[in-house]
Figure 1: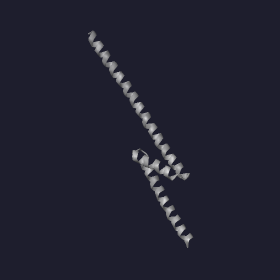
Figure 2: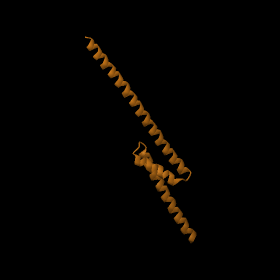
Figure 3: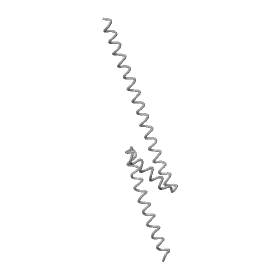
Length: 104
């Protein structure tokens, strides 16, 4: 009879111990995911700020890194990068046309 009580107590303690451990690891994992999302959002913001300041290569590098990482923000980064490359191409065409007009 004594052994049954001790076994039952040991089982209860193991279950409670595992519950606390699982909760702690889940909480830690949640904190890491939240931190990763905040950092990815900060990279998007830094890329947009870089574009505003004319630091296009810096912005492109940040956006490409986000896309390669497969982050939750990779779709947004890809859309921004596509717009940036299109705008850069249009500016190059305009400069070329302007240079051609200057020659004539």
